[in-house]
Image (cartoon, rainbow, N blue to C red; front, side):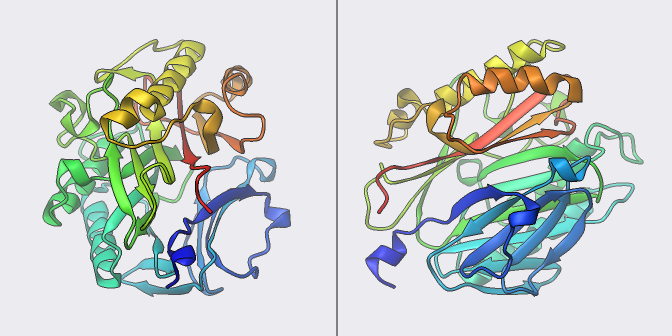
Length: 342
């Protein structure tokens, strides 16, 4: 593999469904945020996953991951995958049921095993879409907490310690049980990032469930042979939380502003310098942004606030779904791309 090839990070962009060309070369994966759910598929030579996140066709879009390298794909134990020799995308789905801990544990375990088998040991980012996220399972445990239990057990069985967990989003969906997809790297340098103004999620007290959520607030993924300023920051789903507590319940505008403030601090100079990353970022550098809003009528207010902080050139999608805590109204995520990459 040449140096130029190894310095390539996967690119992601949003596309409307009617302009999507699934036969285009060097597609690593296509994640459809659409009106129905389907198991992951690799029949076209790349990963495809349909997630039920849209109320209608006008809200649907695709997240397209591309690479400069040839792509190989396959399926193993219910987990579909595509990889280019440096980056791996894989995905799975846990069907609807009365409980999710055991299914999550099994699906995550197979995903982690597959990553190891294929040689992708640096797990940078996970996305999880949980139907009925704030409702209770058959045993009276909130479904999100049920999911977190299974995820934690899978991580611990595979010796993921708290300092090596990836960035992640855990958000509601409109149907289809639980869907997830994962981005991993073979040789990239991975640095988990934490927000000094928040308790690390994996240290949350027991009031948030039998097992705390296992994720980093963000991860910085750099490429081999280049300095730490050359890389991407994958920002986890971020909400109006300080310490471990929700602030401004019932006030969507204040919650949006605090979520933005949390992201700005996370990707800003104080945090990155603390982690010895020579990169300076602001909210204007965030792209491929998803903003999750619990109440549809709140979307215009959330959009107005976000547009005051994001670059006008950033791709932003607004989705009307439930958030991981019943007292949270909004959550957002995105990717910061380095300007130093070739």
